[in-house]
Image 1 (cartoon, rainbow, N blue to C red):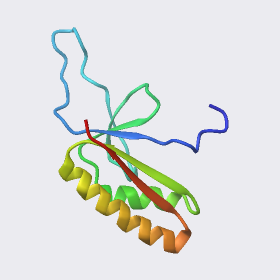
Image 2 (cartoon, rainbow, N blue to C red):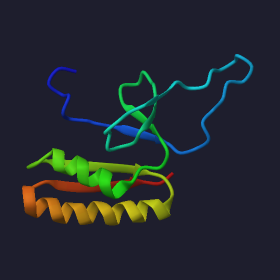
Image 3 (cartoon, rainbow, N blue to C red):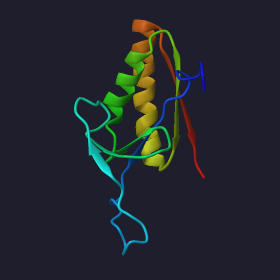
Length: 115
């Protein structure tokens, strides 16, 4: 835990319908709102250590924002999901890799899995 806080950052995005309580068996998630968060304004409170946002992320601004926070670094994007979105995200990652590598020596690698 100590010394590794800059090694891994993760955020998840909940893109399906928000679960509602079902007769007390499971509760609806606790939603919170945020201001000035570049990743989204509505989050699910969770205990897994990362941030869980509601809705589909805007990948173009998300990749650019994260890349700009880490000059002279090597970043990895790890994706598992539909092929159409994989193609879109790969193009965005390569575009930002080219831009940020020239301006601040930040390298972005894209990795995809399909099950």
